[in-house]
Image 1: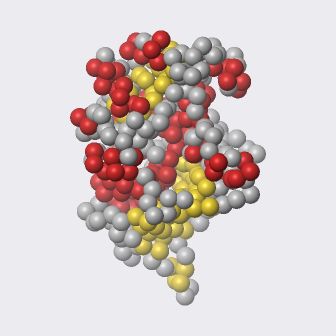
Image 2: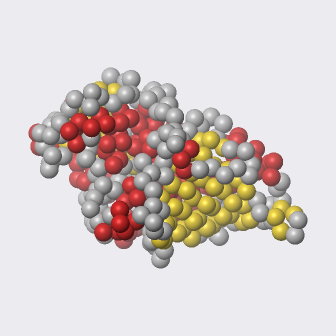
Length: 349
């Protein structure tokens, strides 16, 4: 059994980890930390876990995380970098769901996150945890930087096209929407029910932290200079993410070939569903499941296929966009089948 510790188990990604790991056949939940909730049974805070998780929250100084095989950090930015060096030195694998190790460039990280990086020596080693694109590296890693939710949709939606060299990497546009849980489990005016319900708004238009992360990863797959216009929006739902990606084709290629390109790329990816050309994936089709669905569209001009390709991508921002993806990485790191413990079917209605 894999002995698992979770640092920061009281947020949405933390409880999502608990939900998934509580029924994972090869996991033993060993420690869940929270300084504020020290001693509180997990099931008292999250009644959905009654009968599934018997642990109580513990203050960080009361648990021996070095006795775990792997530790997940479901914490704000900056926490994992402070504790990762000691855990790694003790032979513990680390999976960080925050952004501490997503950006290889220390200066870029500090520019966007406004905090100093305290262990830049680990940036080069950290593996970006997007299994569909980095499967072998993830399997051999001891430190995983779990991708952001928006970047997951953008990278999986664009990778086959960049790999084939059939789009203009310098004119990428993404119009994306996320449910309110993406903002985290905290009290802020903008995410109060009476503020976010019956409302729709863009944010981070002049610059969002997920832009440099996405550009840096996409740049690995093309010699063209990647330029991305990314506009996120907050929508009045709890879970779900929908990214509409626009890419200009630079080669004469028909729709069947484009569809085959995606199907071939993801034929061995158990959590990427390439839907029939022209489909309209819905966020509710992924709710609670570790699956990303995508579909291709090609608007016509004057009765003929145009040069603009539209890729629709949906996922649950807390599962494939966060905790489910982290468990997917854990499976690979410990030599398990990638889909172990992640076969939940989406909830409907």
